[in-house]
Length: 143
Image 1 (cartoon, helix red, strand yellow):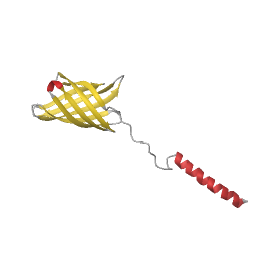
Image 2 (cartoon, one colour):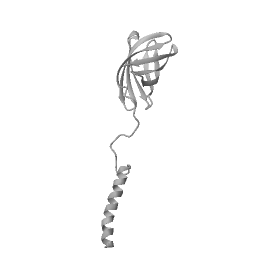
Image 3 (cartoon, rainbow, N blue to C red):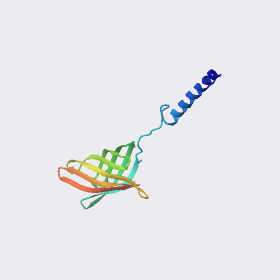
Image 4 (cartoon, rainbow, N blue to C red):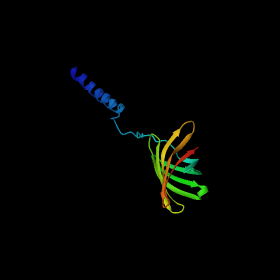
């Protein structure tokens, strides 16, 4: 009788332990992405750049794969269309850079954040450097 009871309980114990492992995550591979969640900012944005007191309307097109951003920036008043790359962090912190050529070749950076205070906003500091010197300004884009 004891031997029969043991034979009955062993498969039950194995099944119970396998079920418990799968419930707490140790029972197999998961197909769900459990990595960080990034703010989704892909698509078109309209806004402006403020550089040393001058305002420039601008359009921004963003392609996004996870944290990686590909940007197309258009500033009609400067007859400028350029591409850039950047990253966004889970907390909305944004950093991007792009090359440009106006009077001479230069590089600009966006350092800012994505926020949703009623509307989606990308905003922050614009830093630019070329043969004419260093410039500092701001950017703000909305949808």
